[in-house]
Length: 152
Image 1 (tube, rainbow, N blue to C red):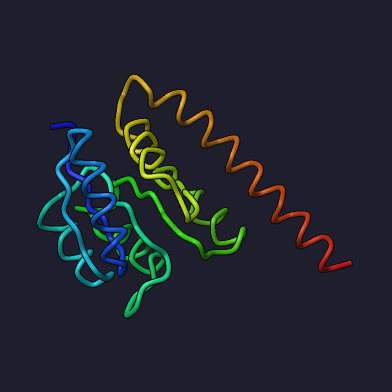
Image 2 (cartoon, helix red, strand yellow):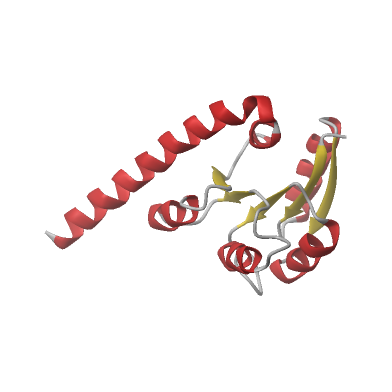
């Protein structure tokens, strides 16, 4: 087994799609329908990575992220946000946490699995971090330009 992944999404079809894809890649997958359930599972199941939707009822993915980072037992779990929502500014802010990355919806399940493997595989981690740093710098630049144009 390559590791345990917690998939958090209020859409059952996305949960099933990612469960099948990641299980076929050798991961153990657990799922949660909302942020409250995700927080409980993160504490008890100790996943190696959390795939986290941003727009969910009861608690957003960003709120879940913040609560996870407050807890010593969950603060270091890498998070991969999967979202059709979220501003560039929100993404840039969350990516300052080195254990966070984004994939926009709609996505290819194989792309998500590849991304997770890169985040967790020590041999691929350096290349992943370089690419992630480039994406973070681009997001920061976009946010700066948006603020500059807005303030002008």
